[in-house]
Structures are given as C-alpha cells and as structure tokens.
Length: 583
Image 1: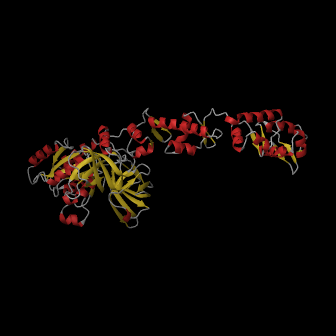
Image 2: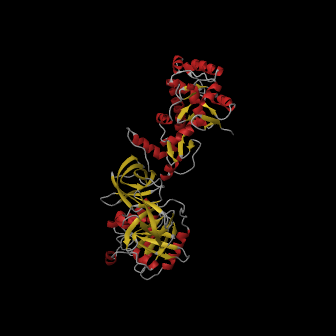
C-alpha cells in the first residue's frame, strides 16, 4: 500500500477528485457534506491499474483549518496538489505549498481540476512556474475533470508512475504511529487510526502510549481485518488497556524502548528570516506550543510545552499562532541538546550546529556527552558504527578522551587509598566509582581490567600489592616461629607486643601470609600439616587423643578441629569422637 495527502485551496475539488478516483466519500461529518468543504481529515483508497493500492488523506483547504491540514500532511510521504482550472493559484494554494516544503515533501503530482469549466493550460503553466523553485519542482502535471471523469485514466496512470518510483519504507524500523482519529466502537472499545510510515504492526503487539503500555487487540487496513500490516499503510487499531477519553490527535503509539520524548530541540531552519519567540510546532499529527531562541541565522533552540517522541532528522513545521501562517520548516538536529548556561553558550552552540551535517555525527555526539548508552543514541536518531575514537564498554560508548581520564583517575584513587591506609585491601568499588565519576558501576570492570588492577571481594587493588609496610618485620618473626612449630600459636598479649592488631592481622591474612582460626593464628599450611598427623591415628579418635598427637594445647586443638570439620576433612561421629574423611 502507498499513501499520499491532498493539498490545495478550499473548494478546488480535492474531495470531488478523491471521490471520483475511489468511489468513496472522504468527508465524514454532516457539516462537511452540507457546506461542501472538508473541515477535518478524510480517508479513502483505490486500486491502481498496476494493482498497487493507494490511500488518500484528504485535508481541508480553508485557512481556518490549517492545523487539520498539517496533521494530514505530516505523516504523508507524497502529495497531490490540486488546483482549479477556472480559479488558478490562490492564497491557500501557496500556504499549502509552504507547508509541503516545510515538511520536505518532494514527491507528488500537480492535478489541475475542473477542466470542463475552463482551459486548464494557463493555470497549469502558471502553477508549474511557481513550483519550479519549490521542493515539487519536478512533479508531473495532469489535467482532469472530477465531475465528467475526463482525464481520470491519465491521472491513475500518473499515480502509478508516482508510487512505482517511491522509495521503500523502512519495514524494520521502530513504529511511531501518529494518531489522527480516535473513537469507540460498541463491543470493541477504543479504536485509533493513523498512517504507518515505518515498521510493522501485528495483533497482540504491545505499544507505548503516553508512558504506558497498551496492547493491539485488533487491526484493520483498507477497511478489512488484518493480523499484521507492514509500512506504508493506513491502519486502524483496536486497543486494549486505554479509554477513548485518554487519547487525542497528536499522540503517538510507539515501539517500546525505541523512542525518547523530549521538550528541548536544536533545529536547523529552512529559512533565515524573522523567527517569532512564540510558535506552534507541527510534527506528525501533533501541534504543540513552543518558545524559540535563535542560536544563529540558521539554527534555533525550541522548548516545547509538551514532550514529544522526536529524534534527529524529524521535520517540523513552525507556525505563527495568531496569524496561523507557516513561518518556516525545520529539521531536528539534536533531541537532547546541551544546556545553555554560560555567557556566549548560544553563539557557540550555533557555531557547532553550523559545522554539523544534516544527520548527527556519532563520534561528535559521544564526545560531547563523554559517555552514553548505545540504545540512548539510537532513540535520539544517532546511528552508525563507533570509530576508533570511541571505546565500546558493554552497552556504553565512551569518548577516547573520557576513557583515558577515567583510567588515570581509577589508578590514582587506588594509589591514594594505599598511601592513606597501607594495610587496607583497597578502596571499595563503590568508592572508586564515586571518585572517578562514572555514570554506571558496570563501567568499572572494564576500566579496572585495562588499568591493570584487580577486583576482589568488592574492592580494587594493584596486583603487585605484597608488602605489609611497617609491620612486615613483625609478621616475618611470627612466620619464623610457626615454621619451627606450626602449632605454636601466639596468644593475644604476644601479638599485641609485636604490634599486630586486628587490622594488621587482616592484612596479613588477605595477602596469604597468615591464617586466623578463631582466636589463634597459624600459617596457611597449618591445617594440612595437622591432617597428616591425624590421619595416622587409629580411627575414630577423641579430642584428647588428637591434642596429644599434635603436641598442642586445648586452646589450639579445639578451633583447629572445628576448622577441619568445616572444611570436610574430618567428621564428628558423636560428642567426643571424630574420624578423618577418606577420599
């Protein structure tokens, strides 16, 4: 299916032409039929001679309904500009063309109607001359009479040529369906309609609407039920989980997790003329009040009164609210712009945007942010593969400069902690993360690896950390004593005399120099040496027999035997006897 919108002055025959092509009535309201003019959006479709299906969004031509007109043009990829042969180019024709240009629409047809009432030649020539300097400069022109049907076959053939040259829609892209109508059907519930410009929809899909999830209960296209629809298409969705009163034109149904709503935009303006401070911004079917701040002649910062799901590359129409005149078009360059806080920040930002391309530069965007999740860039419309200047750390993309700074800061944090407390096992991961200022703890692991550091038990240290500083001699004395008699565990006063308190002993144990077993201290191989003796005893054995065989005191024997039980090397049989576990 293909979709295009009509455009043109009021009462120039747009709806009559759509009716003649489709056999359907695009005007939906009794007031429209009585007055003979389109007030709101109308929809109809036909099958072209090639077999391609073409849907029409029929927009109002009257100036008072320019907001409705823009809602119809916004999601459409092509336009059929309609001009009456007996009236020629009019004010609303020019205004509609301005909207078409503002939206960047460059595909369409010029259709001169009412050829039965006047010679279409002069009106056609004049229109082509006016279009020559517009985005529709290369469109084909066709003359018809919607009343008599003369020229309709030529028009259908021209429409076939138009759709055959249409670029393929992004069927794999994320869904953003701008709602143009919402209503309730008895027995079905809430229904919304819109133009699907990218992606695909299926019954059962979950979509995001105003921050909540809704489910597609039913789906229609071209008036018929469908299980799945692929862009481009006109669709109607029966939604579960939302009331009709909660949905209005201008809201968007979104693929969850693929869009970021924003109120701040940096845009490139289509013209460098005067820019009012207060504007209405049209995008899709939405119309939102905004405040504009010039950055330079070609760029502006827009602050919207309502958040919209926008990304780089989206086209906007800026309209002056009191006169309803189209001021100009704009292209979103950044949907997450930096704050303008310091003096001269706006001028510098304008200069940066002037150097940028129409599509955002991935490396520049990452560099400006320092670090950003790849999925967040995708939501903003920043696409591409990271360059050599970008460090990929899991889901994060980090500028090379930022990464180098973090590496240095990580090493410094560990070194400072070692100087302040030489016996500490190193600062905690949380402390290092806070000191170096990373946005997420998941970045710490790759930083630690690249910095040549170690993560152990929630702490960070240098791998070469083997010394005990000032208490090294005391630990060496204790080690020598235990090598001579591996169960000659010193008592608390002896340890205190050596200057080995709880903190010093913990550091020695952490480095594998000593082993604390309850209140006694051994060498790390002490339990294994004890096992060799206990394995030579008749099994099972009592605590007294073990103590005698080891040649030690009860103070040492009891915690040692409990450690061996805990390791599974010995097993208690009853209250007084144990045995060595074989195997």
